[in-house]
Length: 117
Image (cartoon, rainbow, N blue to C red; front, top):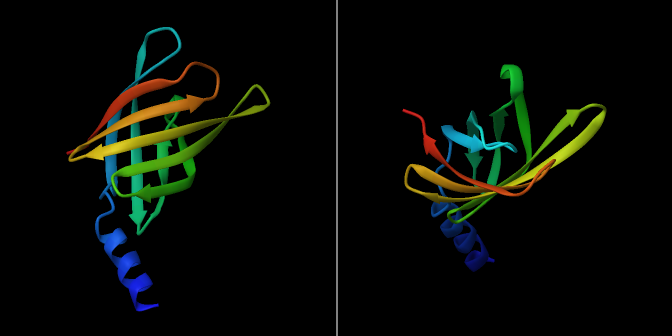
């Protein structure tokens, strides 16, 4: 039991510190980019927060997880009466996150988010 507790504490201690705002130029379907702001709150291995959407709305993230330097979460959006889910997976390195976004209405996209100052 003590070993399990120590292991959990050790893993939590090495989890990526992503709490705060991150900004990325996210590629769209037709080659254009859109500035997107990610606002994260990390609590142990749980990740919550929002990403900026069209017309300035905030979309909540769900299923947020942190494992070492890897984060993942899902964003659900509604368009035309249909719900689309996008899955984000990112690798944290200092003040950058290398993201891959899959799902929704298009091909997978990769981009880099940088910690906002």
